Length: 110
Image (cartoon, rainbow, N blue to C red; front, side):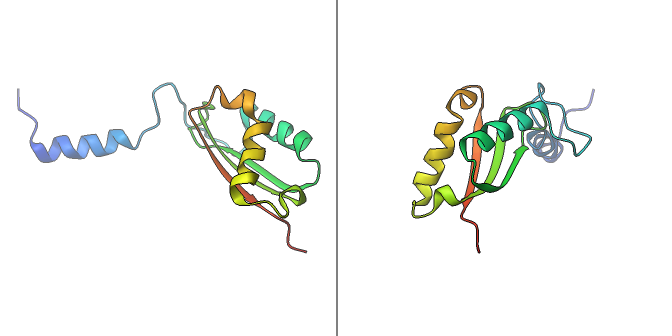
């Protein structure tokens, strides 16, 4: 049996690190997952003046990590950290089951 060379082992490790966790399955289609739909619905309820909401499961479809882009008048005259706190507060129950969350907020340009 041949031993692994350091170069071959390093290549394999780089490839493995790029894979999603084993409990996540890569999405094959562009349709929203149930988790994305649920988070979107909550944000629509909490931010009724939002002009754009985009929720993307960036964990490969298993719901462990989301990216949220939301544009709303409700963020006007608030610092970025306050805007993000508003989103976190709106999703406080859902966040308990997540490993991570990326939030991008903006104010509509008229």
